Image 1 (spheres, rainbow, N blue to C red):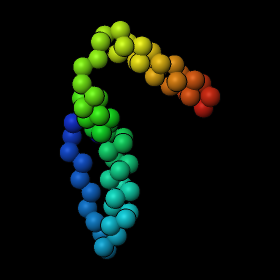
Image 2 (cartoon, rainbow, N blue to C red):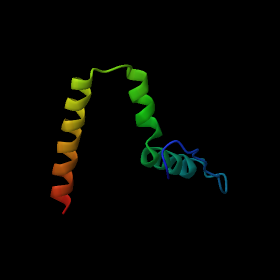
Image 3 (tube, rainbow, N blue to C red):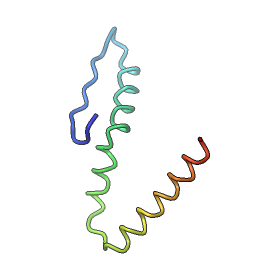
Image 4 (cartoon, one colour):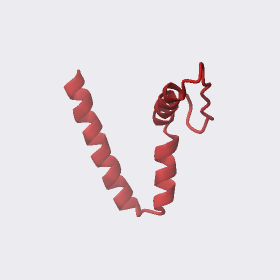
Length: 68
């Protein structure tokens, strides 16, 4: 799914819990929630933004290295 797309889940056999789990997974994979949180935090200085991005990238690198 591309970022910014609508997420829809159909409820089958009145199984709302399963549909809710599926919805949460789609939203997490889509990235809409994280982008909304970033917008809600407001403006960040470029240096702070770069530092956070670098920290996030090092965490992802270590995680990928551990999995491979």
